[in-house]
Length: 124
Image (cartoon, helix red, strand yellow):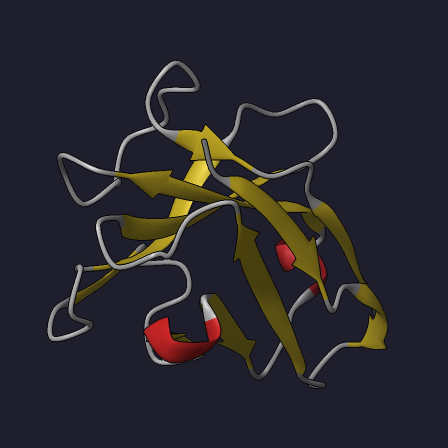
């Protein structure tokens, strides 16, 4: 069993930056590929970024490519999402997902483990 806790969300002006963290407890993150997803009000949850088990491969949604960076520190059992040049359309609750079998790039809340989310609000 893995417990995931997201943090680092908040209110920021457009053009600003935030770094989200996803800390794991219960087990190490080594056996899991990790992903970040987000859900805006009235919209479905969508993929944001993902990283392979060792961190050598990353994937990004087109909407965040070049602005967001996913990374992981397995020694700290933590995954990060550095978000730069934030836009109002990035406003959402951000969730992390740990998947032991595949790099998570599709929303499937029945797969792996999910955190409770952290709110990111970008004002214009």
